Image (cartoon, rainbow over all chains, first blue to last red; front, side, top):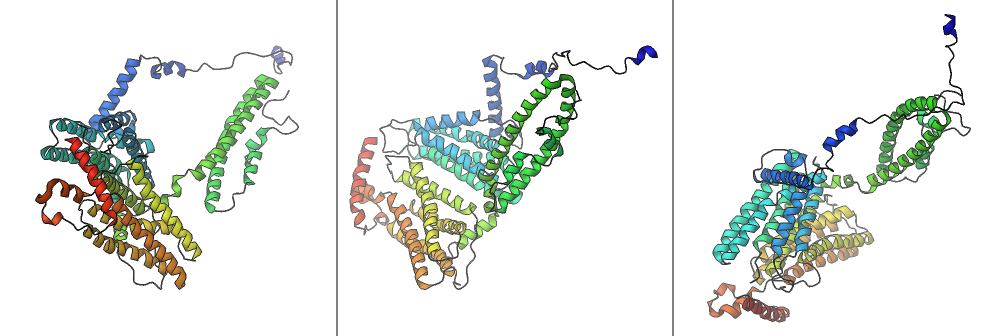
Length: 221
Length: 339
């Protein structure tokens, strides 16, 4: 026992400097490499993003109640669609003023400003969807209208008489109803049930304006 | 040297005391001296903020106490100084975050507008219909709904209708865009005239708030939308004048009756309602004639005697004769060019 008595009051004297490295090696650094996408080749990144965008296009064309559009929202798809639509609607030179054709900036601003207004409106009405999710849904649902624009362009190559106008009218009406229906399937779920009409009307107006811009588009001769 | 659990070694008292006791640090106390008197909304926000902070602070205290124990024992003086620096930086960051989130919650909060959008679809429908029915009882202040959903939707609808009218009339806007002009016109009318009439109501001692005025004028645009929608597609001058008087008149009468019921005295009533009636009716007139398609001129010139008689409308407004001639020449040039 006596040899252990001296051990009872061991203390570190003041003039011995204690130093060392107390930082614990962070174990998650290794796991991080699996999820870090900075090191992968650019082709992989682009392909992965394109695949995600394409998958969402499919969801828009066949709107059923899935949450894929909402869960992994991205704004690439809306940007591509918006730029495509604006470029196709422009199609004229700066001097051709007599038609009052929408300029690129006008279409761009209408689409994004309109989407923001509809999102704010649906949030103010008590919706549970977030700001960017709503922008994502509205942007992706422009896809049917873009398809209609391409079809109209093709039809207009053949001529711009009454028949082509009727064909274009049918195509644009069908695609604008499809757009409204598709975006309603995603947006209206986040609303209380008796207020769905209040959210659907601005969406209807928004796609109606875009559809009407497509319908009244006539290329310069 | 003592162990780290007793950190009250400095004469001025370190930060740790205040945090552990949770009674509120100096930073929080200074915030209390801000002048937030006024709406209870701000007080509620501040109370909520303070409750959240206290939770965070007590959670931090539990965490920092453990750290204080270990570091104090092993690292001695050097450990405490490092700890101090971190504490200061932490406090500064927390204070800044508190101020920023307080400001954000106050000014950029969309929830401020939420009560004004609390409507049911059938309420909106009823109010739309009521906006064309003038009330009869003007001795009793009429109830005005204070909501913004209906007026905003009506303004956007009118923007869409105006766009359609401008496109089909071939309006050329040189220093801007069609969209910008349409939005500027509609929103400018709604917000500007509402503010002006509210100001006049303030001068004439009328009992109406800004929100109610915005709502009233917004619903008054329903008549305008209907008239413009019809007359941008069916181009008869006489039809427009009839609709202008009937529908425009009804919606103006409704607004005027509501304002009269909330004003006392003949002269204030006259001023207020005369101004509103004049502005409302003249706006509809302006919208029609500024963006009106001159169909008659083109048809007369191109097709000659093949026009069915119903499309020959007597042009009895001498002022537009010049405009018609100019528009005709322009349209002929456009048609010839496009062929």
